[in-house]
Length: 634
Image (cartoon, rainbow, N blue to C red; front, side, top):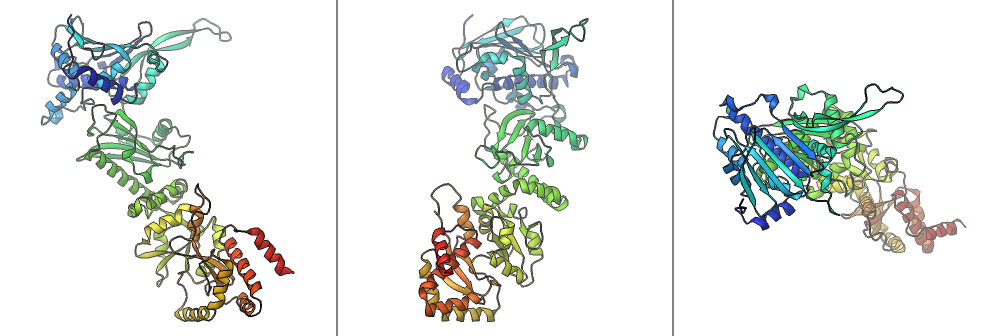
């Protein structure tokens, strides 16, 4: 029998397809099962107008047979089959697809007569067989044909095709597996449980049963219960569940079913906090089943965590984690999207970044936002559980991309507040602001208790203003990136531009600083470059001193940035030492400036050290501070 050559640039192209296009060898089974499903679809479609060529619905099937001795895998379907000409065209020409031609022929036809989705639209999937096989045989008999035909190839060197005997309509693909090597164990695909796992992973929702003989064990009849003997037997099993949970009407699926599906599919020991079932129709049709977990995975805030939704095309898994379907700030969402509208490239593993994918991603994002809004409004307890697990990610989402996602995320973030011992949203804060209040006040720190003790916080609260407590490193960076919420600016109470005094108080303070300018300069010089300036303030209530920031980097931001790997103290805030003009310490400082400047220099350094400790900063030279305190005590 003369060997024919492929009609394309054979060896080079086929080698590229086998070795480059597909990432994982195991997907060969997915491709062959998808082709078998397409063939059954075509036969079913044809039977709608010609009842003589159809089967009963429960007779359609795909069967897998393993032969360890012969090292073969056989995939059989009772679909439409292929004629000699179709075998020549579909298998002899790389990237030619009968499924694609079939679908094209139905465009513009009666949709009521064509209710089938064709999974495979490109003719390369079949050639994934050569990733695991050194020889592939295809025996097929088309509808209406009196005999079958056999196509056989060992790869890029060509193929043979000839008539053969075949009793019934359909196709049998036989893979002769390659020998094992040190790097590849092709024999693993002869293990029934490995095949069962691949069907479950990739083809669980193919609409026709995928059957295979599975070995089981049972107790031999007649053996006593205390000394039982067991025997193995073969049982014909259906490996796939066929009907996807997400394609059922949401009202017909119990919460327990969704929860069990989530826990089994995404390996979580807890039930999800929220289930989102979305069915979109219109220009781009798809179904999404999304889950918001009740807790963050152990590696969520690490580089090892991979975001993404599972992507299906008509029930066939195309991609385990499609990153393009989720924005980073919603990366905590697990789930899947199933669409028959996606434009897939020849491998069905890589997606074109086309309008369908972008439209799906945009719709999914809007749906997640909508459901979070509903949870915040109607189920505050669960929303706060969600925020405890994933609120940090939302804040990072505001900070990244220069605040582009502010409008999407700003109403989802929450902070502890001086007004209530619970989390509050920015909307709630603004809703109860004083009539003349122009700014949203906040204070950063390591803990709420520490922040409460800050002199500036006590002062702002005493003036009747609410203060948000920022306890995470990302908090202030996110608010600085937002700049405003509505028309209200954010204001760090620990910055030196705090504006909560009357005009009369401001004038009095200005005069105090001007009259003591020489003394304050001396104190700054005594402390050194650690502070930009020393000045009096009238906003500290009963506290003697505090540190405030001047410029873009606040004290809190300095602490956060210097926690990052690298040289210590790589970032410094421009600090101002503020002294309470109404505190008794002020009179003592003025006295020392006139009588004992050496002692004033020590006092200045001690006051600076005291202010650093209040702000949660480390002392730069604790032993020096300790010695000065002892000297002053003598």
